[in-house]
Length: 155
Image (cartoon, rainbow, N blue to C red; front, side):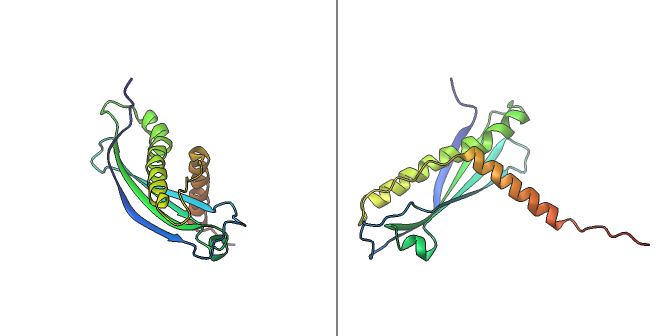
């Protein structure tokens, strides 16, 4: 059975890897992973989307001091649904499925690039995209509430 969501193209729009020359492997802490994303829809009304995934690892100096690598990775993918796909299905599928597809690409890229690096292959940890999407939705909702000017009553 073919999937409804199809990826048309993807690219790595940014990749930065730094090995920690002082890392001794004795006191490795869990990698500090940060994942963010943006999703844009075609302005022509077609069910076509641009999904951008931003991954950063051990960005703070204190995190990097205890880890083998610091990394930034930006992946973009272009997706489409069949023209007859209903809007409810599109809304349910684009974020979790588009992000999961791109994260698989990001994991492969990170493993490949670190595989020939000083401390060997790094496999990015699993991410719960459902929770990430919910968290981002809550943050955006809170942000929009802060932008609404409060009405003052006049006596």
